[in-house]
Image (cartoon, rainbow, N blue to C red; front, side, top):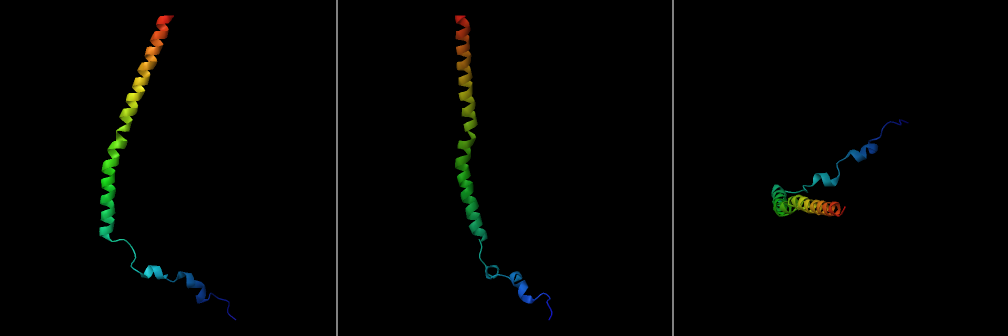
Length: 77
């Protein structure tokens, strides 16, 4: 009795049924998705990119208020 490798052990190597079908996205579908993402990015990016400037302005105002408070305390001494 030969206990070699039997062909049934290679069953997992056969192509599955999903590999034989033509499921997937077409080029047009991919292009439509990319265009939609681009349009969304046009509206979202400026709002996100403008936030660092506002944060700098708020920090500068807080720094000025802290300096004013320090000067008032210095004047009281």
